[in-house]
Length: 484
Ligand SMILES: [Cu+2]
Image: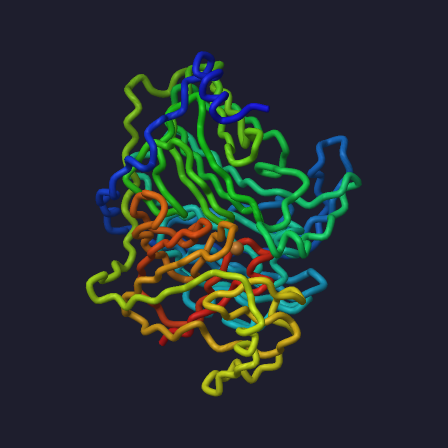
């Protein structure tokens, strides 16, 4: 077994040692330059995403086929736009159950947020729904359904959304790396996506790990080139401790949001988070390893081998990305609210029978609330109702649109929870346990016994707030805000 410490020792001769600057020494991020004003005509991108079963080989070319559910023939399609462009994506549902598309991390209008029963009616089998919005921010995003998530995402329904326009000086090449597990049996059929023991603990892990749909991702890359990596953790459960060996890598964006570049030692990418890196590839024949140090035995996510003529002769000094233009929370006037992520308890179950008389949707009879039949988790002692309860619960809070909020997120469980707020990009201010650079994110990993402070400006609408371990949100760790 190769541990991280052993790797640092043994690989130092053959591969350049990984950058050793600890994040704990990273200062608060300095401001980046704003992007120049946009002068061209925004493009309109019309496309259809048909959710349907498709046969794909995940267990190697000699292995059996699996029946995935995907949005396109390419199992994980990538949509590329430029900031300010308009996306008109028609979801066509050719599955046997209802679905929708949530655009994770994208600040869309509320009615485009893709949450069945909360922001839109479910898209039933045979129906279509048009998602039509302008993308306000650059970055690395993704999209997925928001009901029966462990089942629909577990079957494969996910895609990547890249919004370009953040590079102040272009890099030489780019690689998108989508990491996720699959719960497959040896014959290629799917195993149950959830288990009670997993849902009540850290989540149920897959049986095979893949990057871009293969178990041993390797790629030739140009030599001595500035290579951008867009790394997405789209797993339902797993967190990654990502590091790079064979090159110095700089972190340039977190959840798609540009940061002043800092050297990567390792960074924990919680489920649903993204990390953008730039690295200088070695000379021809040299290798770069993108590794996950989280498991007991180091796991290689990608092996990159340099080839061809050197692209650059100068020192590695990549230009920072342009800053995104996000609303800035007014911390002096922000209202502070505390959210505790904990286990469900009987004492709080009464909440889920409470109806909100002012809320028209609360009267809607729902076929289910997209959850499992058991409840393990809660936010502020409130559990998202399981399917024994057929009404939308009241919101966690009603926030005033345009006002600033400071949330204190506290993890009262023994497991890390990647906490996601829809429709907002928040600023991560501080942690009670770690020194982390101030940065913007849409999902933040809250470690056991950790308190994390975030701040943002509220926008109008109903916005979900939940753990992104899919079995956790389905067993109670989910709520929403009703903002006006
Ligand atoms: Cu969780």
